Image 1: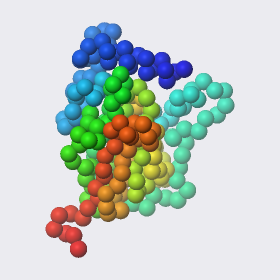
Image 2 (image 1 turned 60 degrees about the vertical axis):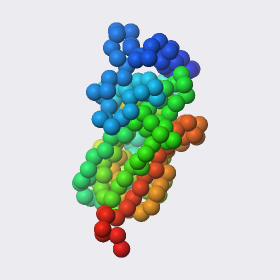
Image 3 (image 1 turned 30 degrees about the horizontal axis):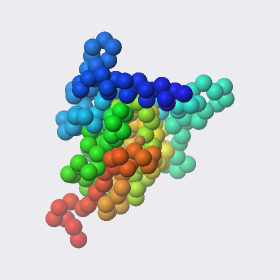
Length: 211
Ligand SMILES: [Cu+2]
C-alpha cells in the first residue's frame, strides 16, 4: 500500500511540469543538492533536499509491526575490520529515477549513457555515500568486494555486498578496493538494473605502477 501511494505521488509530480515543483512551489530537483557532475535532466524527477541516515529506521513494510525488527544499525561484524586506514577519498553517488517514465540510473544517467566507469585505485580505501533521490528503496549491489557499512560500530562495521538504501535516505560505506578488475555495480531490483541503474566499477593499480 505504501509503495503504491509513493509511486502514485511520484508519477503525478513528474507529469505536472518539466521542472517539477512541490506543493509550496519549491523545485523538487534543485541541482545544488546534487554532485556537480550529475546529469539533472529528464531521468531525474527529484533530488532529495535533505537525505538522512536511515540505518536505524525500520524498512518499508515493517514500520508498524509490534515485534522487534532488526535494522542495519544493530549489525556488528564478528571479527574486527581488517583495514583500519582512514579513507583517503570520499565519493557521492546518487540513485536517481523518473517514476513516470520508468527511468533509473546513477547520477541521472542510465548505463547506456555512461561514458566513464567508477574508478578505484587498487587497495585504495574510499568512503562512498549513496544518496537515494527516489521514492523507492534500492538494494545496491557491488560485485567482487565486501564493503563496511558505516553504522556507528567503528572497527566492527558489518561487511556487506548489498545494501538497501531507503527512499530519501543515504548510506555510507567504506571500501578497500582489493580486487583488481571490472565489477558490476547495480540495483538488485533487476528491472531497475535493466532500465539503467548499473555501472562498472574498475579497480586498477596506479598508472605506471602496474606490474
Ligand atoms: Cu532499484
